[in-house]
Amino acid sequence: MVAYEILLMLDPDLAEQRQEEIVARTRELVQRGGGTWVRHDAWGRRRLAYEIKHKGEGVYHLLQFDAEAETLDELSRILRITDGVMRHMATRRIEGSQTSPPPEPESIVPTPAYADANTGSQEEE
Image 1: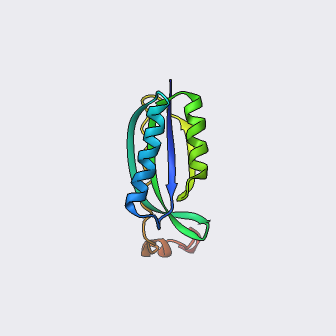
Image 2: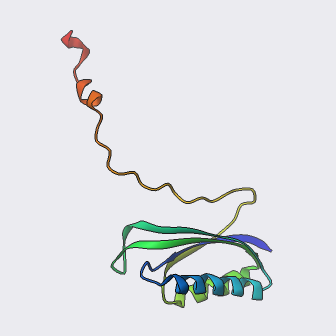
Image 3: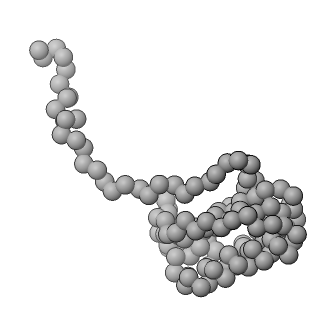
């Protein structure tokens, strides 16, 4: 078996129950294919770099499991046709590595006052 992870982006307008159903169905497909479920991390709602289907946000879930390649192919096929799944990306998981959500973007920080004061050249002395 090969270690995989899928980053799943769901429609932010989906009900919480429907999101849980999609994750549960994914888990069921992995286990039915002879794989083992490792973990599920809900990363929550994140702003997108560009709109997808007129949506500016998505709800992210990281799914980690061990399975055969045929199981991953079937899982990708099912996710492509499932309503509410905006995008998904499957990758091989490197043993010992830990995938973590990106940090929340900081609000716009004003330029410090000392940056403007240090614009003169040294020749002015």
